[in-house]
Length: 459
Image (cartoon, rainbow, N blue to C red; front, side):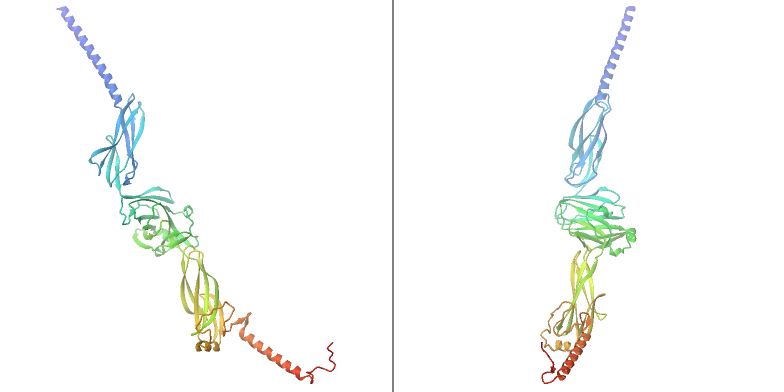
């Protein structure tokens, strides 16, 4: 009996030893299994949450191995949404091998063929939600005085304008909407706003001729037929510039000149006015006010006979030194009274002529002036008026002009060499009379030989 008891005791020890061995081996395999399964995704993200059709989105994932030994795993990049529906579709698979405590970033790119909302994930880790549209505008970069806007479209109508509502901004002057008509289903454009005139890429009108709040520069190889823009301007900006609300204009650059666009108030927001204008070319645009600088740089006048009397013609040369065209309103004054008025458009950085006339029907002196600039004076006699009205003069009904200081047949200039014509004519008549009297006295003082004395010696 004792031998049997000892045998049972030995058997129990052996069973216990075997169980311990099994537990040790199991622990070892469990430890190895845990090390192989230590690869996982720590973070996942997307490069953009709003894109256009066909635009690339990058999905990033950071893989980490928290185990005590190296190992590898496979990671799947999946999407669902408009195209995939409620199920997940794989668009990229990557195998990653990492040492213990190592981490690595992996990525994959995806594009979408139609608008919609898509969820992206790596394995079971959600990376983000992407909204896909046929057009969008986003701020690519911004500083205190600049803002660069990226405009993209893919799959839009070619027959209608595409409206881009820009991201909301608290800037004092900001582009709010851009609506180009390109005739293309896909295009890309860049718009850069400047509020510091020293940073603009183009020459601006001088500060003496302009008050500008903002400059918008257009860049693209995709042209447009026209584009309607909306620009918001804070009321404080107008107050600081002492510029009336209705005086604000949007201009587009054309070479060295600036063309004013038809500008209207599209909306009135709290403490802000929104202006609208339609551009006709891709160029640089300026918001504010540019004034022409027109002056009268040369004048001349002449006279000619006409059926209505003596026609007094006035010519002027106008010069505009500003980079925007303007109108000059000219009033012809005769003896201080306004007798006619005309308007002339003078191009930017250019010149133009102004011509006006007045028909004198009465004898007298006519002093001519263009606005406040004195031109000259013309003396018209009664005989000249009668000749012109009788129609006998060969100049009647013509516009025979002469340069300043000259005269036409039958018209007497008011002065000659600075001397009044009346005084000059009277002086000549008196001198001629004296000459005749002296000549007669000399002839009467001599003899039959013509008044030659006897002692006359020709040598």
